[in-house]
Every structure is written in structure tokens, then in C-alpha cells.
Amino acid sequence: MAHKTRYQTAWLWSWGFLLLSAPSLLASPDFIPTVSTYHAYVDAKIILVFELTPKKEAFVEILNLGDSRRCLAIENMSLRTEDGNVLKFDSFLYDGSKSKTEGGDKACVRQRTRRKWELGYSFEFPGKVRKVVFLMGNTAFRLQPLSQAEFEEFVRSFDRINLEESSDYIKIFNLRVIFGKNIYGSLVRYRKVNVSPTAEGTRGPITLLSTFPKQTEQAFKKKKGGEVEIKVKLDANGEVIEAVPETQLEYGLTERAVYEVKNWWDFAPAFENGKAIPSEHTVKIVYRVEEEEEE
Image (tube, rainbow, N blue to C red; front, side, top):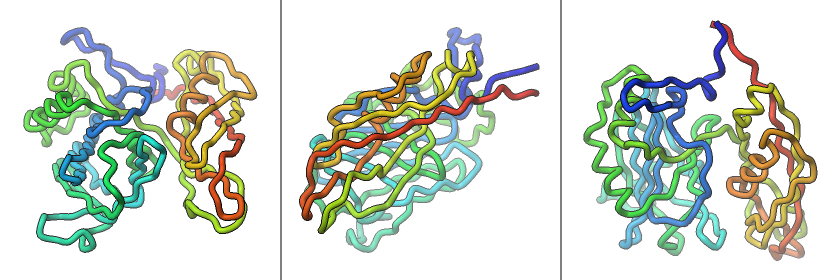
């Protein structure tokens, strides 16, 4: 019996007649990043929480619901402020007695465990951030902004989560019971390039973080893929101010590609004689046809 890949498979639970996506993907597929003090991500394997406080503190909490140890490296936290500045934290602090230079560079959580860290920093605290992305392995976990009330309710629900549950199906059911219809964040594969954010001479813009959006449901059913070229206009911070497709694909693939580049890609700006300047850049997204798997 043929069935779709894990990203397209769905189960209809009798309770509440809820249509749930595959066990590893409870997060919502698309949302536009906006500035907030609170951000979260949840699926059947991991729950991620990022919080900024008025006391100029930042916290990361990880609930590892899976069977493998998970680590978040400090260099793999991708955050931007409302005006486009990139934030880089110094370290994870394991208790309040350590200085902000004595913490570790990774936050690691054993399987079926919950831990929380304070983040050390040396930048001027911005108050709110947007486009919060945690990179683990080959996956980008994109955290969704929450209001304070949503966040407080979200965190209060942690004590109701059974960390010892091993069945992905039951975990999804339980998470739906706890969080209701509210699901947070999305995940996608990515490619990252490390370059200096500044330059003494002259150079063109550089793609720092590129993501690989999944096919739309209609394109998957029709087994349609292809390439979309997108021309982007960048400001002096490398922020996308305009994204226009130069090629077109059917079944919503062009629109999804533009959404992805405009909202989730990171760019280093162009430089002219050591000064960051606005620029234009052409990028490409390739959709590969995902074949159905046989049981």
C-alpha cells in the first residue's frame, strides 16, 4: 500500500476529529516572523522556548521529547532585531553565579529531559527580536512569536507533558490536548555560510542562510517540481525589502519560494570601499519531486 512521505502523511484522530500532520511535524508550515519578547516551537520530538526579559536577560528552554541527545550551539542561533541587526550571544550560562564569559558554547539536553539556560551577551539589549531560528543538524527550527499571555500559558503547560511517553502518535495526541489547536513554529532544511558581516574593500551581497521549502500539497500530488529564480533588493543591513520572481512555477511553488526568501533567508550586505550599501541579488530555489514510498 502506497503512502506519502512523512511530511505529507496525516492521521485522523477520533478525539475531536483533528487532522494531525506526521509525528515529527506538529509545527505549522508558514507564518511571518514579527517582533516579540517571546518565541516558541513545538513538535513531537522537541519544544523550544526563547524569552527576553525587561531585566536585559535572555533565556532558552529545551524540552527534549525524543530518544536522542540534542544540542544547540551558540553560533547556530540566528536572530535579528526589528531594524535588521544580527544578534550574537556570547555563551550559555548554566547558573547565575557564573560571569557572562564563563558559560558554555552549547546547550545540550539528554533524551526526555527539560533544561533552561540564561544567555550571556555583550550587545546593547534590543527589547524584542524577530526571525528567531535555531539550527540543529540539518534542520532549521523557526520559532513563532507569542504574546505574553500566550507564552505564560504555553510555559504553564510544560508540567502536563509526559516526558516518558515513547509513542509519537500518543505524544501528538497529548500535545493537542495540552495546547489545543495552537501549534507553534515550523521546521525546514537549510544551508549556512559563514562570512564576515563587514568588509574593508568592495564586495557583492552574500547569502548567509538559505532554506529549502517543501512542495505545496498540490504540487506533491501532481509530482511537480522545478526551479524559481528570485531577484531581491537588500538594504544596507542585508534585509530583504523586495523579492520578485523572475521565473514561474505552478501549484503555488512560486509563491512559497518568494515567501521563503523574503521572510527566512539571511544575507550579508554588499560593501563599497568598506561601507555597507543597498544592493540587488538573484537567488534560486529548487523543488525536487518527492516520490511516494512503499510499505
